[in-house]
Image 1 (cartoon, rainbow, N blue to C red):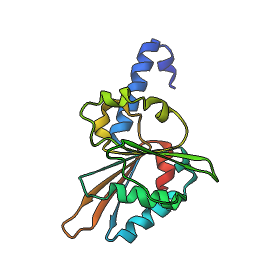
Image 2 (image 1 turned 90 degrees about the vertical axis):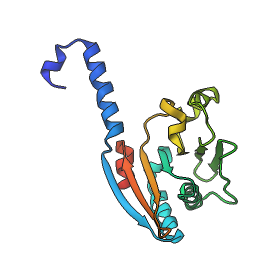
Image 3 (image 1 turned 135 degrees about the horizontal axis):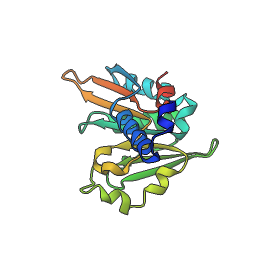
Image 4 (image 1 turned 135 degrees about the vertical axis):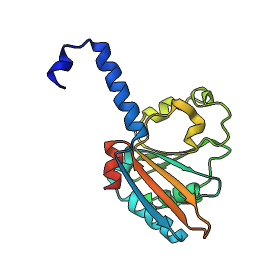
Length: 181
């Protein structure tokens, strides 16, 4: 903090902090673009991400049109983390919880596609889950409106004409930056 800021009223500092957080949400710290030409590329990206210890307490937003590969990526990621068995899409249930017994990692896979009103997030009681430790994977985050906390990492998946995917990875926090390093 600069000396001149010490003489300003505390309300000014609060507004400055809120503005900086808002800018951080709009402007990621790191942006990378990769291509997934095959499902094996998707699995390899998931495997790479699963190896980062910082993922254990991260929030990852997944964006893309229907069929872009959001849930497919999550399935590969969860298998890479050690989740056994069938991994269901949470489209109808909204959330699917997972727990890794060996490491105790709690994972929640959310899909807000069916939300018609962002207040459904609040009414569903998700605030406690997002405040707790563990990995949160969120599909269709815009449908939850302003209720979601800042993501650590964002994946935007675009389906291309040749069925490959262009994936933009954006780090919004220091945790997200570690995941992309």
